[in-house]
Image 1 (tube, helix red, strand yellow):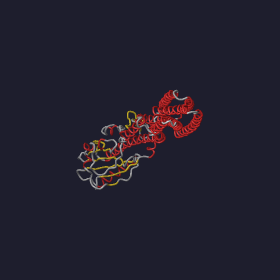
Image 2 (image 1 turned 60 degrees about the horizontal axis):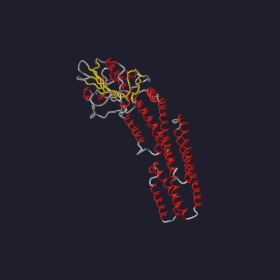
Image 3 (image 1 turned 45 degrees about the vertical axis):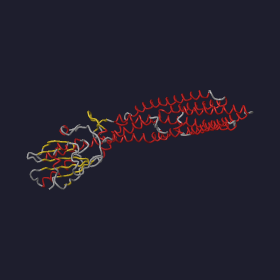
Length: 483
């Protein structure tokens, strides 16, 4: 007759639902206060964005002062329109700041539609303005000397615009190579002037100026969009970061969802480092956003806002729930073992001698050893049935120096099952395991060492995660491991 009995015990579904609901409350409790802080920071970031835009506008105004009369008038009108657009965007963003987390997708889509519309309208307006100026210049060209002056002025304006784009806007980020190509065009216009081909020079310089003006508008709008998205993404990631830091250690709750004073939940421990991985991913995204050398594009930022940041928050919620569930399951294994020990003490002349966790790890199996005056021993093992399964496998291993009667072992298994069911544990019918108990399971000093039983038979162990909940019953708490 084998001295190994195996009983599977399922956790109540009601306990699982209660646990997850209470854990979510802990994660989300401080979100409103955090969002207020994020809104404040995002507001400050947006103000900095608009401050940079204002500084750039002042640089443009200095360049405009040195342009020819007709071109100066054109750029002054363009500046006025750009300022008006920037003011409208700032007002819209400030007005919707309180709703920033309400409908992110709708806000981002609205911003993109407005941006495209503004770029198209501004491009058409500039083209019309440039055509008008070109007509005015053409009417002024009455002789060769005047044609040379007009061509030189047009080339000077185009070079000034080239320098403005080169010095104030991220042209290589959005239009790599365009400025070099246009610089070659301006050099060709200069060659035409040197050769006395003033009509060709004027036409070339005007075409280059128009393209430079449109390039400047495109860069201005795209950089504005990216910086606004960057400020919003910075806020979203900061919220995730704050939630992570706030969630690192949680209240410990019992199976009824009640907080247990004096204990806490180390989420990283109970998730086998998955919590740290989440923190590192979030911090890497934060560093990426702040790195001007490799800062994400507008599309990447939009994807971060719509998908990645919400996914990080969802992962955080699941990790905290998983950690709480695993810690509660660990405590329930201790409670189950204690019930078994008390039952065996009542049925037999055995007494509790020692308790331990496999490898000293509260996430793993819990063991209790009972001894008899004749040096016989019983080892009770309560192990997770599978990763986050909510079920436990109870094994009762009998180490007899004499021969235990078959009927005695059978009565012991049946008695355990009745006792467990009587106390609300949904225990399955005991199964006899072939063979005799491995002596390693009776050596609690070895069982407590890291890596214990690693070369033994396969075991159903959970994925990974942390503890700190000592056992609520004083007797079991005495030797159960680090609380």
